[in-house]
Length: 190
Image (tube, one colour):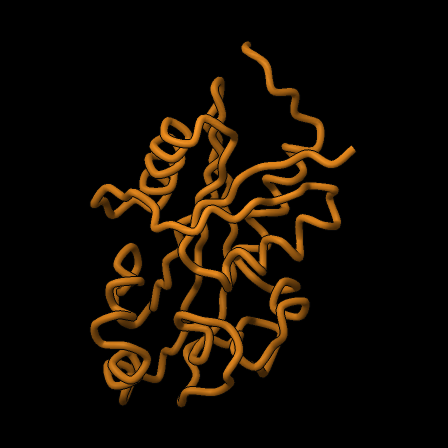
């Protein structure tokens, strides 16, 4: 039996990554193509949870929303919860400029995926460590994928197809945790 859940995102790449994973769990995802409603916070879990609860209150159907941050060690965790804003303002080139002369290129992507229904809101986390590349590489993916190389690979996320990226990805780890919960979850009041 296939069970469905809505995914609220304006990012087609994020939806396609989740959709590829969902098939293996018998979960059918429906893309709701709209930006999520966010609060300003330095806590990604809080942002994802709030966004999922607002989305559920409007859609009246089970929904997942995710929020992801790129945390660069030598930049004191920047851009972190401001990852989307940094991408829109300084872009890949700006981050590479900030990294000039830095020997420590360690970074991590963290995703918080929040699920909301009439009775529960649950948050699942996924993290991947890696390094910031010396240059922009690859044309696949989105966001900071062209400058992030996950541990265990010599490719950036933007040099990987969806299936390969999902072997490493923070988003995939968070979704797998959600899927394990969801496959045995019964939608009913406590």
